[in-house]
Image (cartoon, rainbow over all chains, first blue to last red):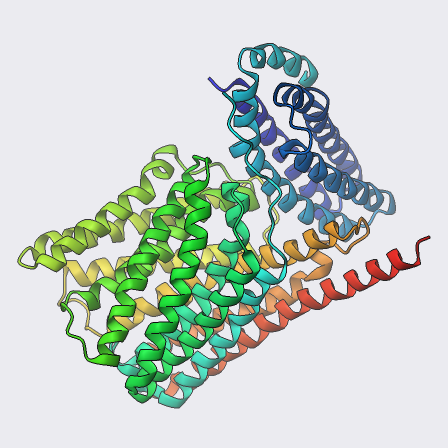
Length: 146
Length: 431
């Protein structure tokens, strides 16, 4: 049983789907559609990052006493993502589809290599470090995701 | 008891992968030059000296060059284990691989024993150092993904292919007698083992990742690499012992079927992708998988019905497997990895306003090079059928695709250097 791995990995897939819907609208230069889908994608991403930075990582850091370890790297990559989120929003405001697609292509690679690290290393470490506590955190995650 | 943390922050310096990437396309140009120089002879028989020189310029100079460089970059990401002394390893492996490949191709082209001796020593060094460094990282890793499993098997296959290759080069250099099975086992471990298993392991991760496709079927991901590896062992045993040709043929057929299945599943997954954007990397993968299926179908036919195809069909199979399959996949991967690495290292330099990957390398430049690559593959296949007339246009197209690929990689490097210069100047101006 790896409750956190399973839940968070599934949520990655939801984020991926939202990413693809927004990118498709950008490629079609469908502005109302893109505004809707990009907002949904960015909200999903912020929610995901929030679950990690506000719930999971602090619990891991407290349990293991590691502040500057893997969670610090993950937080740094989240910051890089936020930089690209800002570029997406700026492209949306400027109605520049090429700029949106450029930033979103970069974001996809950053996102996916980040997800590999989380799914194969960070989440298993979380499940292992948190033990019994993982089930209780999962309840909080589910209500945060709802 | 909590395990010590996996390290997630160990990207090697940008010069580590880039020296391999930039070093690879010139070998395409060299291969093209050799093809133009030796003409139809180079496509006549797979064991002709000119064909062997051509093959190794491509497999060592282009394929392994990029594969080793990309692994030095990706192993820490995929396995979460840092690479010890990445700069020193990269410098030594790169230099030994470049010189060793040149020596080996020269050895074949000029029939010169001293060049074979140099090649054996240099290539043994390159692969031993790489395997030591990458193996230490991979076997220390606690990650238990299908990709890590496939990569371990790919490295074992590389060790086997390299050892067999060095032994064969030593035969040419020092006249050492070797079991005759070695000549057949070396390409099997190099292509079906090292290149094929690496492609499998990488595909499990990057096919779903770049195009947002469904994951590979669990059974295939779990058993694929191990099955291929097991079949290679069995085939090697049967070929070495002799007298059980039926078993060797059966293993070879099963290997061909396994790679056809891998290609077919990949194409189906890509058709079911959630990401509708069709980029050059996707086109590269499709061409690569179609070539993989074609090469393995022809090879299966060669084994099952030897009379159906001439022995020269081996050259066609080689062209499809090397240029069509490996060449295409490697090109597609370079177009994802190189711009992203440039962007990633600019981020580390503090560049929130750094150019994004599409600004670093535009899609038009990628597409032009990809079309040239397609033309080169088509002309090479046609030159196999009509060597006297088409071998020269094929060589020209191959050279052009190499030149354009190098130009694109240099474009990435220039964009990186310019943006980094601007960031540094900005930082210097800041109070």
